[in-house]
Length: 287
Image (tube, rainbow, N blue to C red; front, side, top):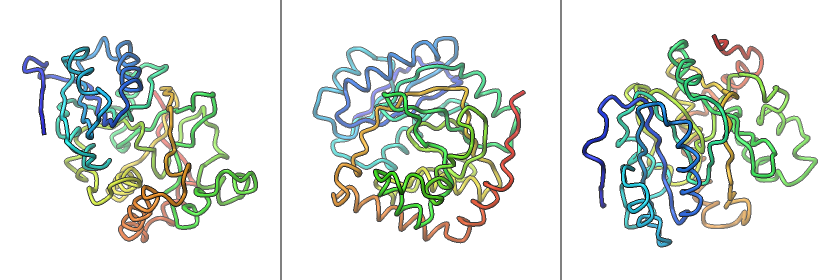
């Protein structure tokens, strides 16, 4: 592991951006450029973990973005372990997790920090996320049950997409322009106060790929806190959907193992939490 960081970084950091990357040099540069405007007036830091890239990503970061806190792994350590490495680098009051293939598009981050400050019962926010073609991503969902897992694998079918199970899990009956509670918000774009890590811990590193975000949010719910979809911030996610391209790939099997861990940990609350969420969705309003 190679660690490089700016020793003169501001101690009183407000926002820490946590990113992991693997062979995504162009996407990573696009993300970092998109963050310059929203972060320019706040004390911030960018904490990056490279998971064994061979495309020149590390060299580009060192030459063009020398202030980035950088950890270089020799191999692909997986999502949860690498993201934990990034989280441990973060010193900010707020942590902003982003996938390397995201792009910040619109909105004032101060609104998100104020919302968390005003509502201590809310632990984590997920923002409004779009595909590059303008379609909304269903990043705020109920906690995934085994039935939800099955329909997610079959979402290329119009019949499946229109089914009550799919619509319920994806929370598609809710207005995407309005604030709402969720069971989980996707790990590609999460915003939370760092102190929640002291309460519930870091990501489960047994989950090499997939469902570590669902697990993190389920633990937040078990701790008596809320997960909230916050549409005032807009992000584009240039999503690769690797397991959908080949449903029988090695990565799909790894993802299924992660779900097995998730379900064993949270099967006692999934249906109860989802029913409560869908029947009485009442997030605190934005002041």
